[in-house]
Image (cartoon, helix red, strand yellow):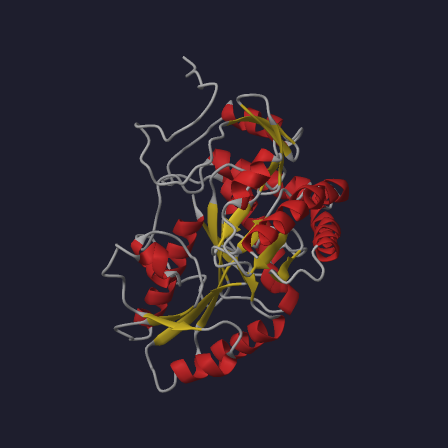
Amino acid sequence: MTAALPPTIEAASPHVMNTYGRLPIALSHGQGCRVWDVNGKSYLDALGGIAVNTLGHNHARLVPALQDQLGKMIHCSNYYHVPLQEILAAKLVELSGLENVFFCSTGLEANEAALKLARKFGHDKGIARPEVVVYEKAFHGRSIATLSATGNPKVQAGFGPLVEGFIRVPLNDIDAIKKATANNPNVVAVFFEAIQGEGGVHPMSDDYMRQVRQLCDERDWLLMIDEVQCGMGRTGKWFAHQWSGIKPDVMPLAKGLGSGVPIGAVVAGAKAAHIFQPGNHGTTFGGNPLAMRAGVETIRIMEEDNLIANAVRTGEQLKAGFTRELAGLAGVKDIRGRGLMLGIELTVPCGELLKHAADAGLLISVTADTVIRMVPALIMTPAEADEVVAILAPLIKQLLREKA
């Protein structure tokens, strides 16, 4: 039995928990970088399911592969070996230069596993109350532990007491981290996003990442880099930290790894690869055959179609277009990001642009109140990037005029 969708969506369903501030739109289907709602209206998708739909919608090679897997096996218990886990893990190890992988289902779970690795690493060294360095404006998830690691008081409000064991520092300031951890024998790890997503598309500088890597080496800490949103080719490297030439000890992944099928992973280097032993950690759905096939096929198609190079090329087109169209506007504070992860920071709140853009046929995101975020599918073309600019730049100008 197929549930009928209402022709229009005007209000939240009384049967679905009210946890999202939704637009009055219900999407029906998609093709490439375009989606359609239940009323037939078309939208150019510059959000990509929030950096999830790596291959866009209804990809001609991904869909048949998933259909094939559905006919074989969707799920089996981790009591047994899952051959597709071995295939995907080997590929992630090859791409990252790290050693082994734990599979889960979401970025939150991947980050939670990273924090457990850090604590176990500390306990194995005899540290009874391990502490992890985290960052202002960070976002690592909404479980109690990942919420505690997150640097956003708004999303933390109402959920105290938070988990202890975190030391918070500002971005890109090596002296600040040295000062905050001075004479503290309990520090076991540093945990950051190579580019903060929810926090406003704030990159860690390449120099800073190299400095933190050196500090972790000197003090025997784990370097844990959250690549959940900025990884999987989005910035023009497989993983955003690779621009700095370093390797982390722990790397959580999710979002774009499965092109829409829920999947998460923690990739570990030599220092962290053998911390977990049987019984230390686990998951019911993580590593299921359908998710593993989605990951394997996503990477295969990305390689065959050279989508990482496309992320660079199309990202440059997108950034150059906005730089040109918004040049000299006093209300534009910054245009930043790498590849197809772009943020435009304004001097005023701009949440209403979500609806204005959707009305004009464009899907975007606004995060940290004042930052327009675009994280489209890696198949987006330069022509589609020009279309994004043509739709959104006038809306930004209009908003700034109204708020001047």
